[in-house]
Image 1 (cartoon, one colour):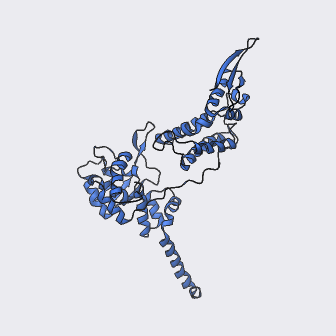
Image 2: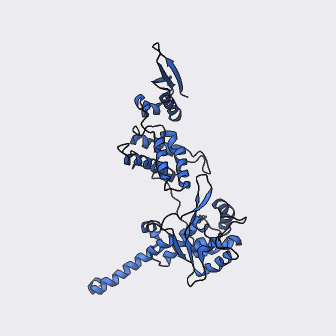
Image 3: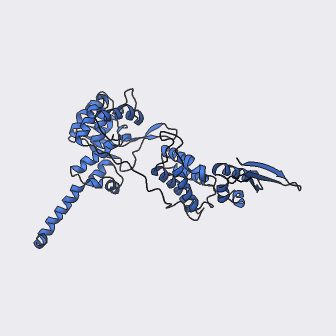
Length: 387
């Protein structure tokens, strides 16, 4: 622990001395002309160690009050984002800052932050086990590290754009590449039929809608009766809202994930009877799908008490995730020859590139069809080509 002590000189001036250790050596000290700078340095020593504190800061930089720290830069970034981002997003970013950025870099002035320091920070994140939650004790995933680096980079870039610092030292820092990514689990029609049969009767319509419409969990659980139109030539569902997480962890209804996520989805015929039963006796503003005790279906209880038992009873191994119903929907569309731009619009992807990146590898028949079409075109133009 670093300690701060006020020392009065013979001429009456007072300085503040911080005593701390660098490794296992005898205590060393740094002297400051004001208490605030001394305390900031002592806090830095306690957080990152004496050697790192000495490396990252000098006396003059610590005494400068007009240079924002990394923590202040992150707070400034969140203040600006609050005008457009959802409260849940701000809450998640605040947690990343608290758990990943502040412990190592928070007290560093932004004009002293180097690319080398950011690289060392990424390496330290890889070695630091997660301290809370279901994955306590495990190393952070590559996605966790990537999200932390992206947030730090965005905060620094905002200061670059505002001419506070000349460059963003976190931009393009190398990130872990050896992480394994769980593959999407595409359910075959037979597998879905087995799963559906083992889902409790009061949740079968919900699971069928997730698969038959390709909705995100937050979209499906937010559907109201007014969003479903069954008494037309082509029944449809209008996706215009989704559950969001508030800053204090309280869920609320908000806009869909992106502009393209606001869409109209045609309903397959086998799903119509199940939806009609789910709508029976409900008013226009009521939720289509509700939990057994009322209110919206939430992911934790649904996964633990409905999804996992049904998957295990159906013998699905490896066990699919709930979101794999959406992936399976896209897979079925592509297998039937539905063009990727149509899949994009039905899935509510903001960009066709997302559809291609996620599902493009599922369309070998479409590629074969393209080759066959060109073979016919080229053969018709020049019979010699086809010989």
